[in-house]
Image 1 (cartoon, one colour):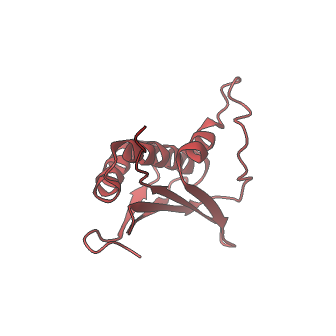
Image 2 (image 1 turned 90 degrees about the horizontal axis):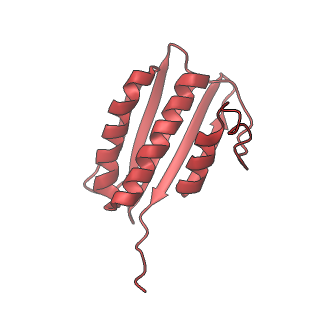
Length: 141
């Protein structure tokens, strides 16, 4: 369910790392209007950048990355990213190759800063990542 004043936005991005900046900025504007929390918006920006980088690097070669941004009531934002990719192990417990510099840290960070992160794979070689972030009011001490 979307909020009354912020529509669902769907965009197609070329699978090109140079497009990441543009995507992050578009999503940040929508996140700001929904979450009203600079820290939550920064988390969304980081997660979208990591997810798009992974889609470009490990899938969607020369293709498109479809992005759907859904604002929800109660200050929640969902971002779906769909691209072509072979299925892979989605479990993230610890970035295994961090010391060797081989990667693995992006999804670990995303798992830490998002409220939800779910991958699905279809029979036609498609991968969809759904990320959710909610505004959380900090309690005063």
